Length: 338
Image (cartoon, rainbow, N blue to C red; front, side, top):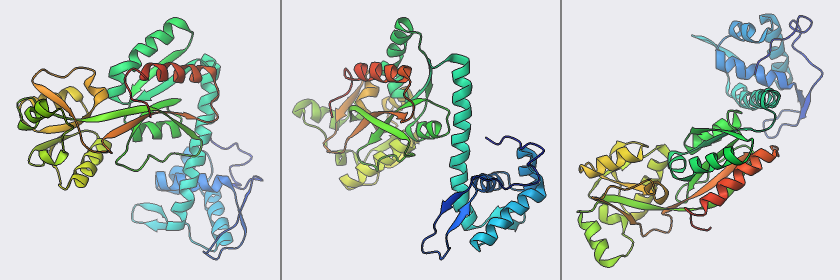
């Protein structure tokens, strides 16, 4: 959020709100940084010129230049540099700009929270969730909530990385995400709280006529992923693709990925017509699996994902707690206990 400055402050970008910081091995002495300069640097990086920043924020260009030069003197380091396209940031400038982006996001979120509360009190909840969760149990939960309370939930499909970004940027109030055990956990801001709901096993989706499927029919033993090394592969979203590559690497091969789609029905159709095999979650298969396909358990200790609920720690609205509790109760029917 970049609210224009009033006429009394536009020519002077300095404020009395300073944050004391102590530098480390860079050799900087103890300095003070005005939070506004961090946001200004973020705007410079985002917009690419002082004139564009001035138009958006209401500061004058001389005030912006003065503000930046002052901090450059204090830190004894260049923060901006001229480029062929306008103005860019130096490496140190970009470091500070990252913090400015966080400040800008939090101020934007504060304004949105107040506006939302003024419009709808505290009962409108914005929930984001991946397609497999939306198509399995969340929709039924939202119907139940709407019939038994005055809570209004807006649902949007979103994969985990985008969901975490939406929470950080104030575009969502809570999220359902999944985390593959084969991959590093998603890292979000410290003000987010992640609550695991349960485990969702992964399955090998393959034609029922495939030799691997017929062998499973005889043995009923989880399949070794390496047995499908000669198959072409259909990947999902970027996170799902990374999981596929990781599991295949552990099994000793590199998958030949020929198609990518996060649509489960499209994946089924591609497998059905012989375009490859895929790894899908058991939760996704609850929406239905075509009769000529088989979803087989995988013999790998990392062949699962954990489904979690994410909120902001400071959001103690009863409506958020109710949504979380209802979704968690419904998830027990579909997920394994942790």
